[in-house]
Length: 132
Length: 141
Image 1 (cartoon, chains in turn blue, orange):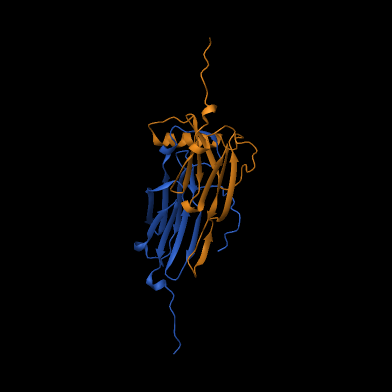
Image 2 (tube, one colour):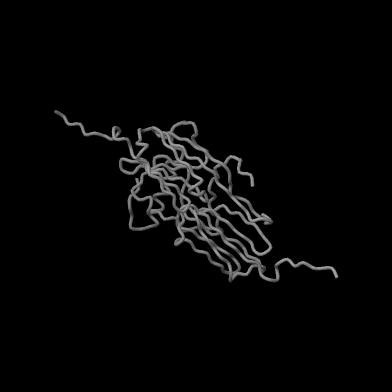
C-alpha cells in the first residue's frame, strides 16, 4: 500500500444520539476501517488514550457496541495553553447481520487502535462448487 | 485552570471546557507549521514546565522520530494502515502516510531535558523550561 501520501488532520466527530444526553460531556465517534475476508469481518477503530482496562465491547440485540474511556487523571494539574483537539470518551455501534458468529468475536487493543475480528458463521462462508 | 474535583464527571467537563476555550489560541504563533498540520498537538503548562500531548494512534514507537533544538521541536514518522490480503474494504476512514511537523515554542526550553512517553497511541513530551527562563524573585534593597 502506498505510504507516500501526506497525512491530513481529521476532526473528531461527535456522537449523534437519538436521545439527548443528560450530561454535557463530549463523546466522540472513533474513525473505523472495515474489511472482509473469506473467514471474517474485521473492524479497526482508533481510540487514542484508551487503555485496555477502560474499554467495553458488548453485543446486544445484534448491535455491537464499543465504548472506550479516556483516563483523565493524566491531565490533572495541567493547564492548557494551546490546543488543537479535544479529548473525550469514544462510542461506536454497528449492526451485526446473522452471518456473524457472535460468540466468537475477538478484540485487541494496541497503541490506541482497536481491532475486532468478527468471524463469519459457517453458512455464510463462500463455497466453491465444482462442476461435475 | 484545571482543579481536581471529587466528581470524575466534573473533571471531564472542566478539561473539555478548558480545551475548547484554548482552541486556536495563538500561543505558538504563526510558525512554520501552524494549525492544521498532522499530528494535532495540545500544549499544557505544568508548574514551570510544559507538556505536549499528541495523538498518534497506531504509530509504532520505532516509526516515530522526535528532535529538539533550541525552542523548536520536530515530530516525524509514518503511519501505516494495512489490510489483509484479498480483503474487500467496506469502510475506510483511517488515514495513513508520512508526517513531519515542526513547531516552535515562544519560550526558551531545555532541549536536553525533554522526556518522551508513548502510551495507548498518545505521545507525551515533558518539556522543561530553560533554567535561565525561570522567574526569579527580586528583592527590594
